[in-house]
Image 1 (cartoon, rainbow, N blue to C red):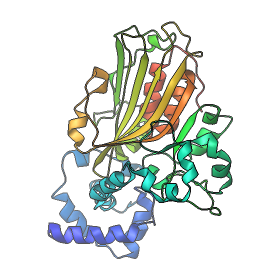
Image 2: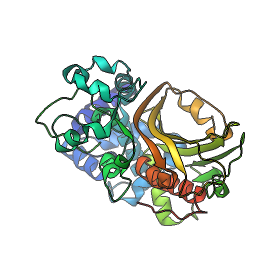
Image 3: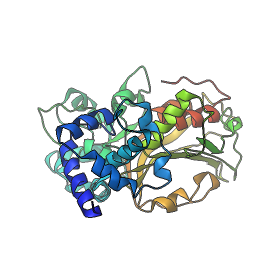
Image 4: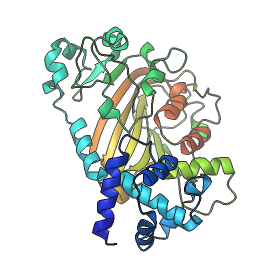
Length: 378
């Protein structure tokens, strides 16, 4: 088998599995392979010749019952073949989608043309079209006109995020000025609006500052937690399962930096980096506050907190940069998904659990950063 023949089969399988299986569902793939008479032995023979040392390290599939008639080595190669199918042709397509979603001429889109009154609800001086949610809340929730931009959020934000944000018993962001990215192509008086959305501590957090906002002018605190392929045989089996799952999903690192400028203004940025279909995506929380040093954790108020998606064209260039060391690397594309104003600082840990994909890294980062204070995890 040649590389060209292998790619033809992979492309054909990609078309067959679209909308039939969840991300890396090995059990479903086994059924699909059998139904389509895929000659796995031939694929395994070819893919074995192109496997790298790193390809052999991840043993996640061995924890499932899929492809049990094959040897452990062949099962790892089958896993790689499935990854090839999942990622085939996705890098270019995803980058084009991001470029489309992040374009800034939102006033020319269908939504603003057909519902011109909406323009008065755009956040002042906003160039991405974030809408003041409370002004459209009744129509959004009751399904009269609007929905959040599902395509814009697809694959970059977890299921049910907005439902969780709006629940009065959890984060309930509607108590505060809250701005949301709507679907620029969506306007309908009848369709349903509210739909679901699609380790190693390199630099451990210093928890001392969170209790009383005690970062002094001109200083900063950084932290970085990373998933690695190190030998982790002694890791707790439950934690190792989360690590393997996160690594398979492309998650690589969570890093943060909190600082106070010489004028006393506090700011913080937290970013989760993950490789998705050949693109490095950063889920980024940014916040700031005018509260002074000594402010109690439960009394500190954030002037604003926003959530953005960064897309990096050069994966390794960004991964070689460390935010926690005050190093900077500009994203190829960046788009804001929502913004909350006058928000309590103590709700930040729960917000990170909701917005980031990795359970393991988020828990490690949040526990270390806020271990001097007791906060409720949703």
